[in-house]
Image (spheres, rainbow, N blue to C red):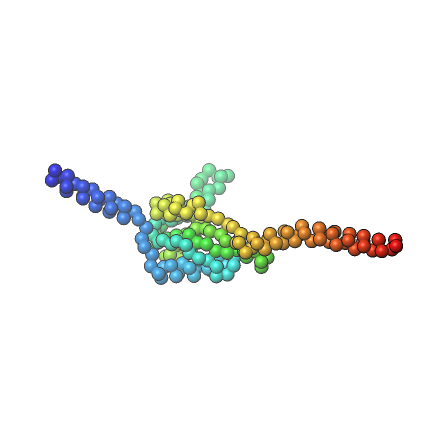
Length: 190
């Protein structure tokens, strides 16, 4: 009985330590500010129709992880393997973000995406480079069903108004145009 009392807390402590060992590190405000500034610059240069200063970070984590990059691909025409791979450990920032896309100055879309950033080399990474890390995979699985691109309610209302105008204006022209013709036609007969 006494042995069981000692074994249960030891097992719980071991489980907690293993769980905490794989858990992503908490991020500092400086890391988040650095990422936010880099994200704004990155989006302005790479995302078409990005509405300036609309990026909002919904969730953010940092962790030490491994990055795997293919520097040079293999040429299938030659028998040698020319593929060059760069692997290194670094501090990775992962963020689930929401931002607006502005089309034709009147239609706004809200889009949600995940971004990966190397805090040491100050560069954005693709998911292929970091998916081998369990913390990144866990964070991705948490939000993978939330990647969306939707029209904002105000833009949807404007779109519906424009579509209804396209349908209603010809009908109204036809109604009023025919009335003026029938009124002038009966006036000349009397």
